[in-house]
Length: 229
Length: 231
Image (cartoon, each protein chain N blue to C red):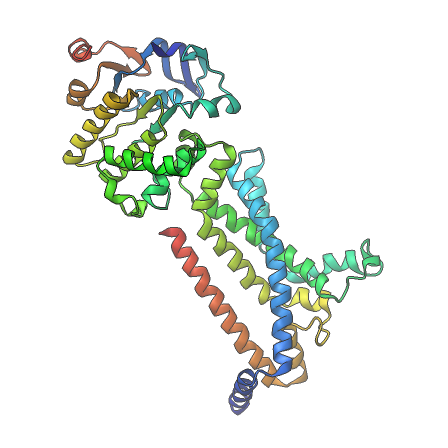
């Protein structure tokens, strides 16, 4: 099943075209790596896929339904797609309450909520941190809690903007494993941006290479892109 | 020097013995300033929040105007409100002049820009990622606004405390709109001005000590909340 079907998408800031994608399809339940140099438009594309930013032109079908970029239409869609930023920020409260945020919005009952929080923290190896103050966590721990917070909301698609760029090697391995598990166990479609080609090899089913806002065939795309399919 | 020491000692005696006149004056001050702070907060905090949270044409001009209003002299506000509530004014029939209500109106106008601008500053300092995070987790506009408000809570409390500190120490509005009537509209600052005119410093110094103590307490609270806001 195709989760995103994008056609003739552009994003323009002033006179500069940030994104120009004639066609892109994202399949449900797979992991996609989005590669490209800084300024290639990776984060902008993630923002558009996360319904946080509107394209200048073009059409997006999400689960075969056309997306209208108005706030009233986008807000319910965001319940299906959660984005974890490159430098995620946690609300200044406990880890538990951070994870509960998305669940309260989805009106999940308290008992069920506690169970989901436990499971999500287990998934990222942070169960003992439930009552910790979120702003006292290290960079790697913050990244893991942010992923757990996103997963707790049970999205169909998880978008991660350079999830390992600001963490130590140990946490990088842990985060890659967490993303793989999320995809394996929960069948969540994962789209992540990265500069690290080894992560593409070990994690992604498909790789997409962006250069100056255009999807291009990377020299290594065939080699990396087909290793999981 | 003797005058100062004598006044200070008599003042301490008045404060420690809880002199009924001092208690009455402090009571009026706290009641009027407390009420105007609550009113200004009820209007200024949501207004400041909306200005900071929303994008609209003329936003920067509005903030500049609010910042300008911070420097509004109390006597100008006194005159302005007087024009409305004096017998010949539009609100003359309400008979508000020389009442605590008139003082509350004037003081509310005085600190409304303080509450609003400090709230705008507190909200503007909040990292844009909080808004984006709330949105991506499925929050609607109201829920996102609540997240931002919650993150700015210490800064907003500091805004309210700063406003109270400003209003408890003002004299122009209280004198012009309250009239310094003993037991009714006599506040710490107007009483101090009167006692100074009479050349009797004991009560003035005693009230000065209390006012300084209150200001010190307010500043301690202000810095506590500012510190929490930056933490």
